[in-house]
Every structure is written in structure tokens, then in C-alpha cells.
Image (cartoon, rainbow over all chains, first blue to last red):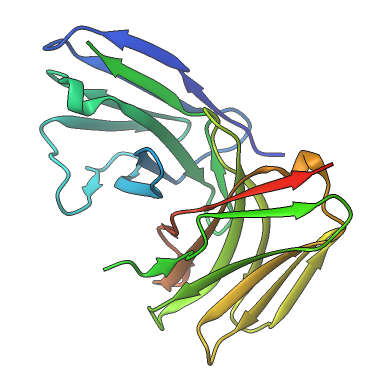
Length: 114
Length: 115
């Protein structure tokens, strides 16, 4: 079945630094990729939707300059958390969609900003 | 405004019994519904889905029921097994331009199946 690989699974960084999270579709071409953030005891909150080769569409309240999304190819999307602060600490999950097919999720990245 | 609601944050059942997880939605444009299972520190894994043209879909121990008039769906797991213990998310999407688009998730229900 479709597999989405997300790296790193866990990262700790210092305040003010930037962190890049990668999401790769391993055996299919993902026309659309989604980035979610999960707060404790809350649902998965969609942050942005990206289509290959075009700018990401951000959800209301998500700072596009802080959460940079690049979808350079049909198999890779990256989320860069710039100038990270402790409040950015969260669990980030990507999802890839192949055309009219279903959604496949990555295994998530636990970001801790200290 | 929460468009997908899972009003029970947790549910506990005995092994072998039926687990019923409920989900309500408010957006009448939603036409595709999915259930995901999630373990801590992992991404969600797809369980089962249903299109709005159906009212039931079954896959092994998992059955999803959709009541469009009530804007309600439920996931039945029978028989429940200890390995089913996880957080279950209900998700919905609307068809835009001929294809399903972004998913809207509920807050999840923590299911605990006791041996």
C-alpha cells in the first residue's frame, strides 16, 4: 500500500533556530500534501495544503512566514518552522493524497523547542 | 466552529463486546467520511470510510454507519480486542472541483478495550 515517510520522528531545538521536517511519498506521486499539527487532547488541526510546484494554501491563523512549506516535487514536501519558540512545540503530521485516491499519513514529528 | 464533533473523549469496553464510537458533523457539504486510528506519537492509520451515497460500509470487524438526515456517523467494532485500544478520529471532507479535498477532524475518542 501507499507509504509516507516523515523525518525526523523527534527533534529538540533551541529557541530561535529553524527546524525542517520532511515528508516523502515512497511509492506514489502525491499531487497534494497536507500538514497538520496536533495539540494535546485536541484534534488534528490542518495548517496548510500544498500542491506540487505551487504555493501552499494556509489555514486561517497559521503564519505562512513562520511555517514555510515547500512542495518541490511530487514525492517531497517540507515544513520549516522558522525562529522556533517553545509554543511551537507540538506533534506535526503530514499527509499525502494521490489524485482521487485516499490520504496516507506520515508517522509524525515530535518537535520540542527549549 | 467545530464542524466535526466527537463528544465522547473516552470509551471503555470489555474484550469481545461491541465498541461504538460516535461522530456528528454540521457541514452539509461533507460527502465523504473516514475513521482513523492513532497510537501515541504515531501518525493516524486509515480504518474505514463511507461515501454519502451509502449508509453502511463494512470491513471485517469494522462497520461504519452514516445517517445523513441526522448528520451522524458511527463506527462499530465487534468483537473488540485489546489491540484496538487507541484514539479514534472521525474525519470528513467535501468534494471540491470533482475531488475530495482537505479533511476536517474531530477531537478523537480514546478507546480502551479491557481484557
